[in-house]
Length: 368
Image (cartoon, rainbow, N blue to C red):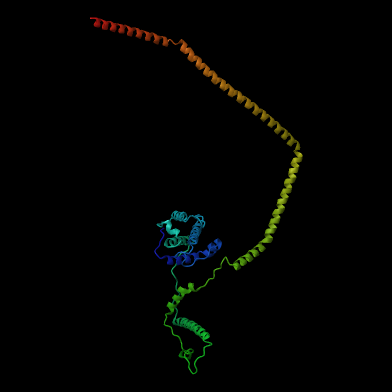
């Protein structure tokens, strides 16, 4: 499922607004989260407050994802926009949308990327609810008499509008004094002229169907207005007044049940304390004795640990003394040093004889 951006943001924004009205976003989103309803160019054009625009976009995306069972918590207004945009793209990929947008485009809070995300999420939401776009159905062609009746009604409405305009002009000219003996041609022909139309009745009906939704004026309540607060307070007061008697009776019944349970617990506690007083005294004595035995055991355990530590130290000293004695005994019985001394003396004697021979040879040579 690719995020399509074939049309301009203005056209996509009009489609988004119509799709939002189909899922009743004014009650389920705006009233619940205290947002104002959108206009037809909100996400198509930059807003003077881009932070508010981006927060509206992220909240709307989170609400649409949660309607599909995909948990995506709504970001806070002052969260990092880059991280929020990146998280939205990741969640869209998890839902099966292929996105080529960068987080910077979503960070703007308006434009083709924002409108494409909202439009595709709304299409996915409408498909999951079973909604399908159908071809427009036109009424069957009527006979000439019906067309003539419609044409006459159209002429009458146009004539009424013309009369209203002329009446307004007359109201503006009440205090204007016309020249004596002069009358305008329009005033003479005002009651006799019949306006003829050259518009095809079918085209007129098609044009009426096209512009009829735009001609409806819906006044949206402002949640910050004090009258709205007063009205909500009255509604809440009536709701509380209706639910108070039943709730009070239920709370009184719960209070009586809790009091009865507390009384039963107190009675049972007194009974246990009275009948088990001897056992409690025995238990306390046994517990005190156990405490004394535990203290004695701990003291003896500390004494034994100290003695074991002392024994380990003495054992180590004994081992070191034994090793010293063994090394000294070995050195006393060892004849290797004597053998080495004898060998050294033998080498000295040999070397002395050789030196004496050389001295004799040198003396004999010198004396000759």
